[in-house]
Length: 116
Image (cartoon, rainbow, N blue to C red; front, side, top):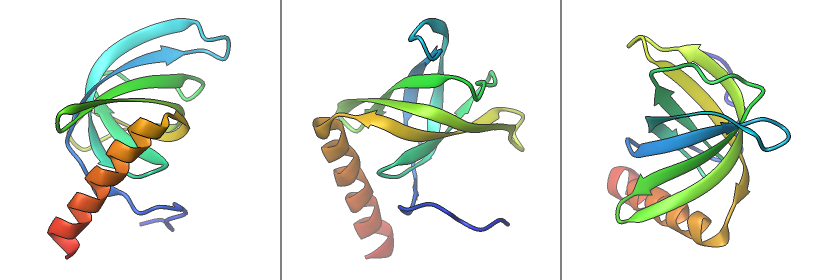
């Protein structure tokens, strides 16, 4: 396995999400549904039925517990996973303060439950 260059540790997370792919001008190209596979303060990995091109910016809405978190990020990679679905890595570029608070709470609760 390759070297982990992440600034923040990712935690496993299976949360439903919807996404919109935007080009550099903000034009919508496609949209879809998927789920998170893991998440951190600065990025996430998501699983979808369709590949997401790396030139796009994603506007993602994630259901975390009773909250809906809106995040914008750039696509870093897309690969076909072992399940035949597509796994996409996304680095956050715009996270509102309230969304970051929900993410941090979720990550802390996960760490306390599984590493505490």
